[in-house]
Image 1 (cartoon, one colour):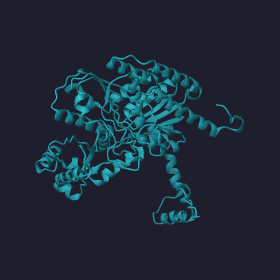
Image 2 (cartoon, one colour):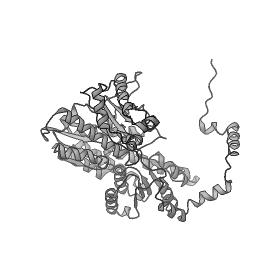
Image 3 (cartoon, one colour):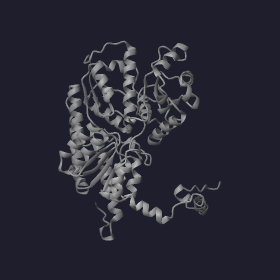
Image 4 (spheres, helix red, strand yellow):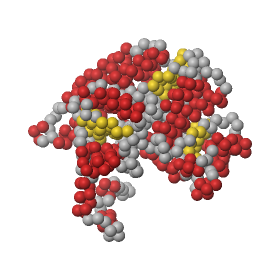
Length: 509
């Protein structure tokens, strides 16, 4: 019998003597501050004086709760069948987008790069783009290539339209292959901006290529857009809800299969996605329902203006009221009654909320994330009797602020809340120290501030790097509300168990 391998995890590995000595020897060359100075500085960053300085800064961003535009463009491209994301920029940027998505979904992410370096920065990246397109068609055989840009290409002013025209003229790009493209500089906007830009370009490119004339209402079906959604489970839940209605629908931008493929022993570059032929036909639908409004502004504007379509948009439907609104809109646009089975689901989640109410009522929470997700979370917390206190939205704007503030004012539980648009998680850190809360809600990036402030983190949103499979569970709809409720109340109960003295270490909670 072979000797069993003793594999030590990194928590234990780096406590071994040789690694401890290695760190100590390394510090000798760094001229470090004394431990007393480090401790004093750390404590100072928790004070009111430092908070005021922190909120006065304008020239630096520390740990923003957002990602780059091209990352969103990659996700949008992967929402369509046999589509290859093509990033015009450096190889390092492409590796970042791929790894960021892969760490969240635990799936490989196909995307190619023009691998621009110093010479392309000086002379332009047209040759890189043309050669790259020719290579990726030969190697990966996509039916559509979706091109986006990084900072380098944007700063030097590369003209994608002209470059792609030259690629067709040279024969590197077939005349009949659709190539939507979007300018997505990382120095402005965020991942939701890039998602929106690419999704609109895909719809516009495929529709224009078809030569159709829109006939809105000709088809008795519904277009559904979920937007930049880090939960593959939300797509399955939306399909389940629409199926219960008996509605005919097209999900425009369905990336769930590409980010939740099975292990069959064979790898493919393309797993599902919205069929390309369905996009031109979507212009004839009775209407469009979007469950993210802030990440789909350009796309919805295009559908409304060019397709002349009835468009309805809401923010992420988390909880009872928001799901009620979702079902009412599906009913209105599809002409079908809300199924009794969904009404029974509603009753069950209301009952579950009542069961957990005693443990969640009055809990003060801080939250960070994207605008649509935050609107949904605020509404859900207010329904539970939880009190939102600090709300940080790095990619929010004044419209988001107004909507969030109006929602908060609708409930006495929102009386203490402050909304911080354009701020980052270092701002959140100061808020947690100066006005402590019971719970924090947000992505994995919030864990550092939460740990320092000794506050439990409920991981909701994108990205979630340090927990597995949360993205597979829906958080929208009544079933999603039950999933979130379960996560919320059991986290509170875990904290109670950890802090309970012997006489209160109860069997039943």
